Amino acid sequence: MQFLGENIYGHTKKVALFRQAIDEERRRLGRPLSIIDIGCGNGYAVSQFLPSEGDEYLGVDMHKESIQWAKDHYEHKNIRFECCQSEDLKPDRLYDVVVFSDVLEHVKEPVVLLEKSRDLIRSDGLLLISIPNGHGPFELESAFAKTLVGRWMLAIVDFIAALLDKTVLKGVWTREIEKDPPNLPYNIDAGHIQFFQLSDISAMLDRNGFTVHSVRNLSFLSGPYSSYVFAPFKAMVRWNVKVASRLPFRFVSAWVLVARKKPDRDGMGC
Image (tube, rainbow, N blue to C red; front, side, top):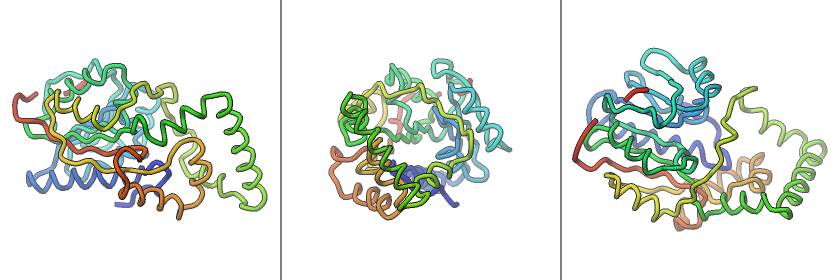
């Protein structure tokens, strides 16, 4: 399957890690999987690549415009998308895999969402999470960019990039911006309100009935400044993602965690 080109945030690496875990689970069980993707958004960067033929997939999100886009472009056969709030998730069926792709950092009560997800997943089922390092380069860049000095610096970087885009490096930033489909909807109002360290998220998972089996680093630098500098240059993007794999967890911008539900009780829909 051909994924999207890699970016500063390591999205292609994230999808590959999700797919690896899902494919291994499919081989382990010897059958197609049922997958629920909570906070799936518009489906463009991640969701469309998760299920394989025969899998039953449900993507849910509260953002109507994003869900409608996903329905229009990716819904078919056993692939469905539904618009609903996380508190409306009902444990009326079980899934083999639950996915949280950059979700828990956006919600007021991530513990409640994890509790709900536990009731949606079969015994020994998979939980796949991508989440930013709350004290990593991305969050630090983003926080600085919101300060007065940071806003001025961002404006200067923006001006320099625009000037280079029109002169020396003709169109490199423009092509990067235009590679996504036009009018692709995003829930831009949902900012980060949780800032986890790896020990925080690991402990939270353990308390709520999950065992973390692996943690992988996604990208080193990412954020408003790094995206200006790195995004148009694929060699730099590849280096940024590759070097992250060699760094300690605390020095990277985001992680992918593969966890498994502890054997106990079982128990979706909207």
